[in-house]
Length: 508
Ligand code: NAD
Image (cartoon, rainbow, N blue to C red):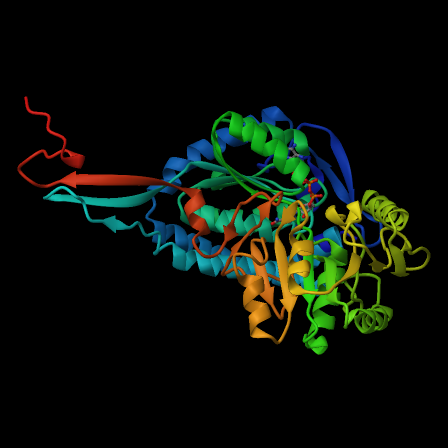
């Protein structure tokens, strides 16, 4: 390998850990990073230790007053340049993401496109960080709210979206006037280094300090330090619910702010009147895309009993056409899981599901031999399930789809909501009453609810996130920016009196 990294124009010392000039290089343990695509060594990284973290925090704190002093539209201009730099590097960065994480090349490019899109969004937002103005009850008074930067924003991200989730957070945090410290997943450090390198060039070309964007490569030890650090005003953490609970507890103890984007267990309801020509490809893409390693992957299918057997047949046929293999080869639909631990989790889940009464109707095997040398490739799997199986309430990050049936819509909605997670959901129906019931307050309890599209593949314009054990955070579009700023309510008295609110008299 390393051709992919070289294509990006990044020299070997860039990731060797030896130059000491990069702001992410650490003094902790050395780790080899292998690609799940072919098992080849991508390179060695040296994890940061807590001293490295303190050094980076100092750089961030020096950069913050410089950055927040720039008018927001000027900060937007820097983010615009970053978006342009990403346009130039889309192919290289997309390839690197695909090779390091194992998602298809299309999805690797898509991830970089999402970064570009959020930069565009953030540029516009930089002129729209509006506060409201209220009517004061006191004569000659003006009351309004305004929004100020928070300070240092810590971003902890997961392996499955190695670059886009950072950009969702960072682009918005930056235009809001914050500086960022990013701890990417220890499983995908090279994609993050490439991003840092691209943004650093933009900063340096504008005579701005690199401390506006800081990268720290390390494992959960660094994540825990970030959660505990009073100097981080907001921790935005994306990952498993287990990680989120730990971060929430630590940040909560110091009354800090957090955005939590955690695990999902997403379902599609297929009604008796669904258009299966749309439902089938949406289900298959949702369940097997990114090898089932999206937080929004479709994990549960709740099918009206009248469609159950025929839909299962259609799905088996569609799964039979899937090509599994090197994700950089655009003919393939499904790439590898991230590592052999994920493969073990897949195998255990398939076994447990069968022990709990599930019937394996497709897949269930690990692929071996030519083209599967990394031993990270698994067969997309369909399991006929009973909605009460405990395993169905857990998120397994693999292409396993549980299919269950229902008689009436309320039952389907209950099955859908009866899990600890609440990220994404959808219904396929051509019946307006069913669609609106699903979207009503007695319908889906998820942060994302779709009609006639699948559960995955969100756009950046909406607020992204979910309820319950998904953490309740919102990122990306809509008014998610408000979480990255502090709100200040201001009252100005321009009268010649000093009236008190609620008519209280205090005469001296
Ligand atoms: P993970 O929880 O193992 O790791 C995520 C990040 O958290 C990594 O950077 C890791 O080093 C760090 N970390 C782990 N434990 C920590 C702790 N106690 N304190 C601080 N940091 C800690 O998750 P993963 O395997 O990389 O990613 C898969 C999970 O992420 C899935 O559950 C998936 O649903 C979720 N995810 C959610 C969203 C969302 O927006 N809701 C998006 C992507 C992924």
